Image (cartoon, rainbow, N blue to C red):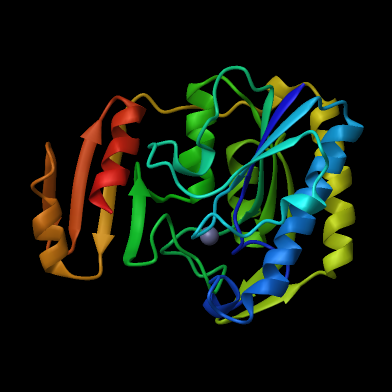
Length: 265
Ligand SMILES: [Zn+2]
């Protein structure tokens, strides 16, 4: 069994302030360590379920947060950013059996994580087919496009709640809840226990129960913080500035959605 793990930090236990997520800040080290431990717990759960090979994408900011020395030897770690439109699931392909998301967070436009955002902190929100879209859903649709099931997610409560509405067979472990500019967190070691057992359970089930529906048409809307950014981005092929700060792009091809996200942000 070949497993893919995409890991972010804003949905890791305890993480509350941007200073804790930025490598150049002193606070980053202890939270990057917890991110590593949550990924390690996911690897151990996957290995208990019979994983042969685990690929991990360090998919936060610099892509240089995770300490590979603390992970099992059957892992490969993707660090940095290639520029591929698969972004946080770079190198995912049809050869994988399942995808897991660790440390994921609520969407830009929502109030369920003090660090809620989607793909870029310099914009207000991204909507897909009328809903605020999470980084989770953008990348889960890529997995679906490749016919690889998404079976497990850990992160904040708001994200986990949104996933239950998409497919309740996907096992979700909420490790924190955002209230205004604060978070309420479970104990870091309890988070590791729950992630390890949740991943093991998710991989022992019928993985295809976790399939999600990929829409046939996509309406992408991006709200920028500045109207002049929206004006400039509206020159992207088939994009329209529908309000002073909002650009809309419509397509039937999900790869075109990814291309637009890459170039419109
Ligand atoms: Zn992040």
